[in-house]
Each structure stands twice: as structure tokens, then as C-alpha cells.
Image 1 (cartoon, helix red, strand yellow):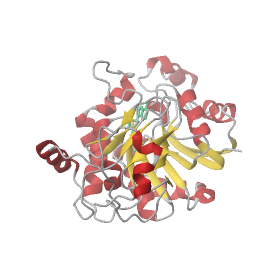
Image 2: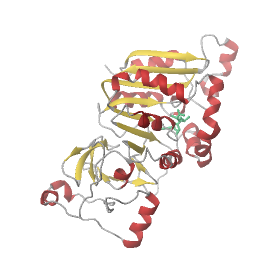
Image 3: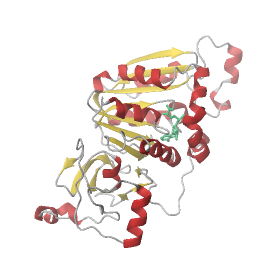
Length: 342
Ligand SMILES: C[S@@+](CC[C@H](N)C(=O)[O-])C[C@H]1O[C@@H](n2cnc3c(N)ncnc32)[C@H](O)[C@@H]1O
């Protein structure tokens, strides 16, 4: 593998990455295989590998080191990336990411890039509220697209195909841009966004390691998806690893009621959206205007495991974060809402 002189002279190359690119251009991507290869042979890379990528979404300095679209979840400084360019699973897996300011490195694991603040910590374990922890379970992650999600129909969710179609209508102004599917679960909608060809890049983002592993397995089984512009990222919705104003669209399906702090999450979503960028979310209502006062007593937030909101609260949340053009569609306890960054 040859490296240009400019590659070695570039100051960014002085940064040390724990995981360096070390694969051949035509190798088949498989994280587990990659790990065993590296452990067995203890290969150290001295130059970068370039893979064919349909679209480079990084600010390219040279093939080895670039300023990436991902930002440090601690200080929001764009991460420095060393490795192949491109927003696809093989390229990201073979890359190392580092924040020059915090001196913290971020790497991929089991197919996803971990951009949580706690990434790489040895002793501290973050325990989130139950509604977040539930989805970190391997069983729930496995069952999610195998029956769990289908149950939402009883509450008025129209089903993934129709929800996708409705969301795509709202996302019209974001065509050709970057979409982040926040709280993507096992990637039900991320895969649809990637397949649609509507976006230059799709980032499937979730806090649950097991949901992301499931998502990776689904992608692996689909030949058309493994090399498209689709990235898997572990992150907290309240600490999104992107620069301010760098994202064209944010989708959050059936997620708002699972977030520890919907206000922090909506504020973060607003921060990362560019001017004119669109946010579309779906969730379950706590109650609607036709719910009797007796039923409302039983559906107070304190008595529920999830953070179900009312329509007024959702609108309030969006507008208080500065989003405009709020509108929504409602069916039984299902709401799809949208708002735009001015
Ligand atoms: C009900 S699932 C929704 C999955 C998918 N978007 C859908 O429409 O079916 C809710 C998701 O929210 C994620 N979640 C919960 N807390 C989160 C947080 N703090 N940051 C990011 N995602 C979170 C869970 O891991 C879970 O995958």
C-alpha cells in the first residue's frame, strides 16, 4: 500500500489512533473476522486504504486523514478520521476517529461506531431510565421487528410502509441531503431511507448496542445495503455527535416516549438541523381531547413507564426549541408530527 508524501507530512497524521486501517481494498467486510485477523497478526498500518465509495461525505484532506461529518459528543468539535473515506459500514469500520481537542478516540464495534460520551470507558457504566434500558436487552432487540413493532397497529400506528410514505412527504425539502434516523431501533426505517435513494447519506442512530447489532444483521442479509451510504452509530439523542446545522432531516419513529429527556432531545435535534431542515417524529399520546377525565386520571405521566405526552405538549416542545411550521396527523393514540428549523 503506497502512501503519498503529503500524507506523511500532514500534521494531522501525528495523531495516534488505537485502531488504524489495515485491510485490503477488496476484502469482504466482516467486523468479527476483522477483529480476529488483527488480534492474530497484530498488524499495524502505516498508510491508509481507499475503498470505492459512492459518495464522500467527509471534508477530505487526503485519503488517510480527514475532518469527518461526525463530531465529538463531548465538545462537538468535528472528529478527525483516519482511514478510508465514505459513509458506509466497511469504510467506517476500518476508520479511527479522534477528537483533537479532547484527545478522545472513538472506534467501531460489532458493525456500529460508538459515539457516546461513555465510549471506551472501563469502569463506569451508564444506567438510563427503564424505558431506555428495556431496548438494550438482546431479547427485546431480537423481538422488535419480529412481532413487537406490529402490535403498535392496535394503537393506531398505520404500519412501517405507510409511516415511511407519510414521513417521506414531510421530508421533501431534505431530498438529496443527510438524514439521521434517531432511535432507529433495529433500523426498520433507516433501511427504507437508504433504499429509497432519496438521501446522500443515512445515519441509523440508537443508544442500544443490541438494537444496532440487530440492525447490522439485517443490513448484512441485504446485499443492496452493505455498501450504500448508511452508517450505524451508537449515541444518546441528548448528545448528538454532529456539528450544529450539519443535518438536513431527522426522523424519530416511535421514540419520543422512550427518551429520558424529550426537551433535551428536541433541543439537540434542533441544534444539528440546518436552516430549513425537517424533523419528523411519531409517538403514542398520553390521551386525546376525547379521552374522559376518569381515564385521564389513570394516564398521568407519573403512573406510566413511558413518557407519553399530549399533542399540546409535543407542539409546545417543538416550538419552545425554536422549530416552526409545526403540523401533525393523528389516528387513535398515534401521532406523526413535523416541524422545521427556521
Ligand atoms: C420503540 S423503539 C423505536 C424504533 C424505531 N424507530 C421504530 O420506529 O420502530 C425506541 C428506541 O429508542 C431508543 N432510545 C431510548 N433511549 C434513547 C436515547 N437516550 N438515545 C437514543 N435512543 C434511545 C431505544 O433504544 C429504542 O431502540
